[in-house]
Each structure stands twice: as C-alpha cells, then as structure tokens.
Length: 210
Length: 210
Image (cartoon, rainbow over all chains, first blue to last red; front, top):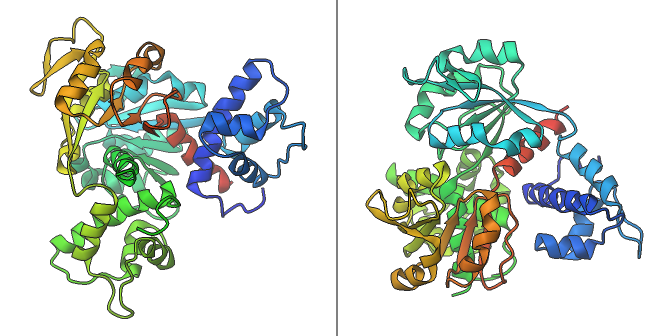
C-alpha cells in the first residue's frame, strides 16, 4: 500500500462512500463503473475519484472504467473490512442503546460483544442478549473476549472517572462520542465523533453562502 | 476570507477543535497561546496549526504566539457561530430524542425549535417543551419559525417517503444521521454523519498498524 501514512481522513471517508456506491453497482449486475459515475453519486469530481483510487494503485483503463467488484474488495481490505472487529459499548444511555441495536455495524463486520455501564440499574441486566458489565470489569472482559475497539457513549462528566480504566484495558481503538478530548497514549487510536462539531461544519457551509 | 471555496472539511473540523482549546485557554486567563500548544492539545503539528490559521489571515507574531480571545472570535465567525441557528429535528427515536436534550447544541448557538415525526403516538405530544409535529406540516413550520437546518434521525427506510417534503420545505441545510445518500438539490447543503463510517475510519487506522 503506497503512501501508507499520508492518507487524509477526508480520503478515508470518501472511500467509505465509494464502497457503498460500488456495492450498489455490483448488486445491480454491472461489470464496469466510471470515475464520473462514482463522482456524481458521491458528490465529488471524477478527478478526485481517480486520485483517491490511485493512492491504492487501482487505475481503471481509459474508456473501460473500473471493475466494481475488484474495487469493492480492494477498498474493503484498505478499510480493514475484510475481517471482523470485536467491539465494546461503554455507556448505555440513549445513544449507546441505539448503537447496540444498529444492524449496520454487524453487516459491516463490527460485532458488539460486550456492554459496560456504571448504573446499578443497568449492570447485570441484559440488552439484546448481552450482559451489562460494570466498567470496573473492563480489563478482564476485554482480555477474555479479545475486544479491540470501544465505543464511548458515556456522559462527558463520566469520562475522567473511567479514562484510566480504558487506557489500561488493552483496548486498541476508541470511537469517542463524548465531547471530551481523551487523554490516551498514542498506542490507542482515537476517532472523535462530536455531534456539535458536525453542526458546526454545516453552519460553516451555510455561512459561506451569505 | 481568502480561498473561500478551497477549505477542506478536515480543516473545518480542526478549527472546531482549536476553538474548544482556545476557549479553555481564555477561561484559564492566558493572554497568548503558541501554535505548538494548540498542536499538542489537538493532536496535530504546529506547522498544520499555522497553516490552518493562515487560511483566515491570522498570523501570530514570531515568539509571541496568538491572542486566544482574538482567535476565538475569528474562528467563531468563520464557523458561523457568531449568530444563532434555528434547527428542526426530524425523527424522534432514541438518537433524535437524545439530540433534543443535548445542552451542547444550545451552548453553541443551535436552537432546536421544532420536532417532527410520523408516529401517531408521538405527533401532538411534547418533548422538552416542544410540540411534535407531523412531517406533513414541515413547510408551514419551517416558514413560521424561520428554520434553516434539519437534523435527520429517521430510520433509513423512512427516507424515501419524506425526502420530497424536506426538499420543498425551505430548509437550507440537512445534518443527515441516516446511512441514506440524500437526493437533494445543490441549493441544500448536506452534511452526512454515519455511525458505521466512523467505525470504518477507525478500523482503517487500526489496520494500518498490522
């Protein structure tokens, strides 16, 4: 994989979009797809599509376009979706509970295998067939179930109390839904999702028009 | 604002992060901040910070750093946060309901002023002091309340039935929490949030390490 370290987050999210378009193309029984068709469906330019795909050494043939099934398997491998990932959800408020029920994760190779909370009402109960553990048990459960990724959906006030437990749990990556900036070592990958920041990106775009 | 059209989404999300760091700096009573300090708190490089800020013509002085309060007001203006935005939430499942209660939106200038659903159990009820309207009423309510942005949190299956109503409602921007690709004209800004794509970005990062 050339330029392994230089791929921008924006390119990665475009690959996720291309993957969905290409899977639809395969499902529709088509054997080729043009960069122009991918661009128009993903809201970008054909030049951008070609540039993104060339990062991974995939260079459709002029006039013939790309093979969608070939691209699907390449992109799935690039995104780490050729294997399954074991996930824990930490914090079973409304967002956390909604994630547990979200079929889309399973369909993409993400298996939610453990749940954590601190509420005495939730710990010990079952949600979608999974027992809710107390966060104090995270190291043992991560080890036993070989969990790699934690999805953090606790209230922001709860983060300081549990961040050390997460750091020492053996987790390799955290999808952080809280507005907190997590203080974790570089050995743990963090991807921040911030509902307010998403709205800020939209208000930026709308402001540009005024 | 130079290079108005060329600012990448990744730069915008870094600005949102800088804004939070700078507000903490102001709150701590500090009168200068270095690009290095901003970089270490935001997980980027000082060169990247300087480049991002230079896009907006803000060039701290060598050895003196930046004025955090000046940067806060510049970034707030760039992101369109110097004014308030009126928001509708469409779809009051768990994610939609959680958003309605999220204080962070109000604190950032986003006022949730209308709610929409289609469920007969929800339409007509009240949630956090707001009446739930049927989606069929969206054009009237958007006009009456001068709503600019819709946050779309309906199940993906519901999108085809309501997308035309949204398109014709007068809404200027949509924050799309569904996995659907929305077919809306270019006059409506769409920002996609996709829970599965966020996990894909994390699985990409983790795969790079193997």
